[in-house]
Length: 312
Ligand SMILES: NCc1[nH]cc(CCC(=O)O)c1CC(=O)O
Image (tube, rainbow, N blue to C red):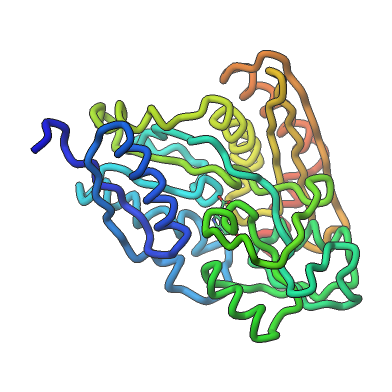
């Protein structure tokens, strides 16, 4: 028997989501809490149709949040890049744990990198951001949509349907697929999605007991970086599907932010950067806002709107 209540952790059933939930459970166990996993099926995992704008927002995260509202669970574990930026007063982002690597990887049996992929190779990605950046680098490639969780995508690669696929390196590492033949793509060639490689852990607003437990998992630098990235995404009215790439990093108490907006064919590409010493939440949000405003002045919102209405 224990005086502390059991912390119930909601998760999707995909292997990556289960890994993330177990990771949080282990950290809470280390801190002396009893935990229980509450696995849930979400629309995003079952639906194999190509993602379009109308069904996309919160596809992966809403079902898990619902479990908090229904008091089936106390903690929602999300991949932060899948969590919509619109604030929701019913929840508190209690922790952003130390971020995994932010890079994307090109997965192929031949370990091709972006430059050695044979001409006209068929490359699978479900992300407009990856598609647009790859097109900008290699206009000859045949980039096609691919859906499903990491395992499903790899089976489509192995069956020969694709010559290569793009995946977040963070997911590959979490799933301990260290032998997967791949090349990490240079960040100068491909910037990640806002929040890529980071987890976001939500609790019910006002649930101070769970907040106390989960906030121990927060890494202030990781939180600051994803705050900058998500601020830019939110101010561009991007949503999770827009071809927007942002990376914030902190080195020696200096934050560096690089944001990129592309057309889907990669022909138009806007870049803005900024840096700041001794960043705190307020000054970092201001820096991100300035970068977003410069992108907007260069026509970013019109580009994003055009991409939203275009069929790929
Ligand atoms: N959209 C699915 C998703 N959400 C988070 C990750 C990877 C892990 C991460 O970025 O935190 C993935 C798979 C992928 O993009 O390859």
